[in-house]
Image (cartoon, rainbow, N blue to C red; front, side, top):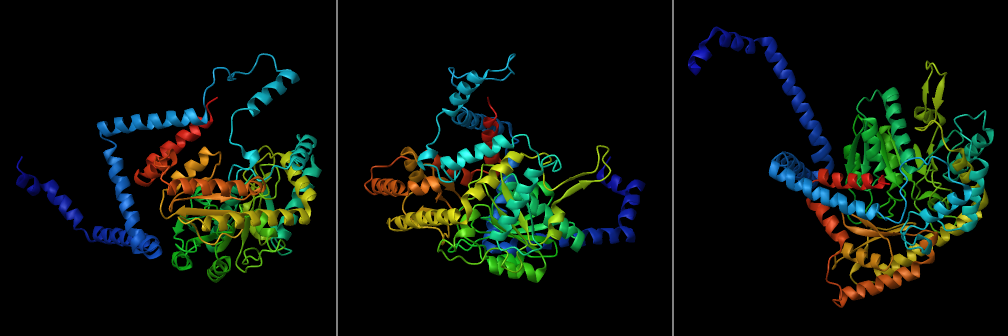
Length: 544
């Protein structure tokens, strides 16, 4: 049938009449208005917040990801990419989970349980697997003390409370009391008021997750916010992005000042809107050891009646004891008006056994939004303070025993050593011609880059000498974290770094290492592909 006949048919005329109906026109106008509103909202959170340069980069990146998504559907590209990802996954697996034919693999429960003698032998065998020499201070971060007394104390506490579970406080009153006391002590360290409250969690990530969930629920009940948003600098810990992903929140990353590496306050101010429930800042941040301007962030939070979480997970007890140790820091804790929550990892510079952190709130009323309860469950009335139900009371006991053993004098001495070592390493780096330090690191971390050489190649050369420095990106760099073990080895680190940089200057190093290749690829390949490679790493962790 000719096109003209179709257009002249009664069915076509009916459709045209329907489309010209005034009611439908109103609907179309409404749809157009909604589209314009969403477009303006998008511009507000991109162009206005991020500025023209960053918006251009993000749009370009988005279009690149979109183009790659459709290009990947082509069989030739898909097959080639799958082959390359397979190779990458195999390489990762070989490094993370190398297979040794002489090492037994247990994938089925033994028919008869091991005796104590066999068990001790097997534990020693697993403990002897090749690893980076963290005991000698060669690993940046990860392990925060190598104190045999503290380790023995933690093991003793664990043994005494190995069966305890704070989910049942009436059964294990000692564990409940120790947790409450640690929370009270940490609140005092961060200058909380008498109405403040805290909860112990499994680590910094859970503390951050809980704070985000708390402010989300507070925003919904108090301000009627149904599309909650978090505003944080790009340097904020990835746990905030995880929280946004888990809890249906929107994360708005604002840029950092390229000189100070602090959150751009003007960008934070522009990003605040009716859906904002939480602003986040660091004291100190993981990448560069820089402290955001918490006082000014507090003013913004207070003015707009939104939450302000200060991430002190890495800062931990070092920032709490810095002033007592003779190092003046800007205000960052509950003395700052507007601060509503703080996270502090007791298993970092509190030196407690791994698996404890404290999330603090300026009021017990706000803390209640963290809780979960179900009054109608057939198993009885259920209530818990955090994500976990059952929790290892032994770790609470280990934390309590550690802080009581250390005391304020012990933590003050440690803060003096930690910060002193960071300053020494920083000065040494700044004295090397082609290296420079990012921002103004305050406590334990110093991040640096090179004006002349690929910093990842520098890191790889240090790795060959037994050092494990942490690689950074956006911008590229590496960082050194001062801990008990690394502070003791700081002179060796400086000497090796000087020799490596001299080798570069003398032209003795010309090859590019694996780290440079990996981060070079990460800068050019779509993030979805990088995520697949990262997931291969996680998969490899679970290969027996």
